[in-house]
Length: 268
Ligand code: F6R
Image (cartoon, rainbow, N blue to C red):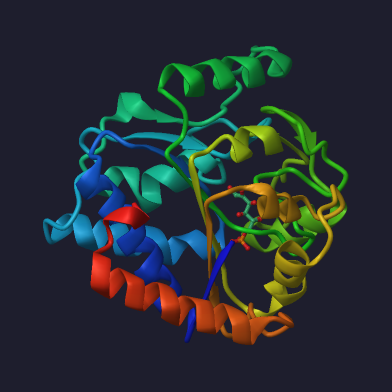
């Protein structure tokens, strides 16, 4: 894992945005795996700004989101489809027909959504770069603790904690889903590169378990230790419980000087 610790959430979004934009400049037809949530808002703002200033085009890109709530229609502002339209898709030149979420249409059997989504990802050639956030409980996508490390896209029940963490986004009395369709952990691990963003002190314990803890289904993000190409961008607050901090900073310095000498092309 490449661990990069930056001053604040703004710097995390800056570097994350540049990494995604650079990939699209080098390989415009890339397949991106995308996440929703509070952490990614700043990332999407950066990408929209870059697009407006001519710094990135999504014209040939394809996207697959990690997850979508069950029981919430796509026109509901709480749906992850609505989030993606609002925060990114409506503001860039992406082809709407190449933006995918694991949405279960009204009347569709939710059990069939996962295998169908997997087929679509395979048909697109697999995911080149998967963007991830991390839950306070170590989840990635909606793969909650105890999820099979070998899981594929399927229906998952959210933990009480995840429901509680996300309740701030729902009005009192508004229907809040307890079920979602999420890419599985094996689906995420198939991505050729992974970019994890985590900011804020409430993520520090989960980040430490992900990076320095044992690989365990009780912290699904810890499986990323087994992936050969993961970049983790953290702000100071999210990095505060890491024991090996010195080494990550030192490694980052070495990588930066390698990049200065040999260019960035090995990195995208
Ligand atoms: C959302 C997703 C989740 C979030 C995680 C962090 O698509 O996959 O795993 O990335 O819950 O959410 P925030 O950024 O809101 O703390």
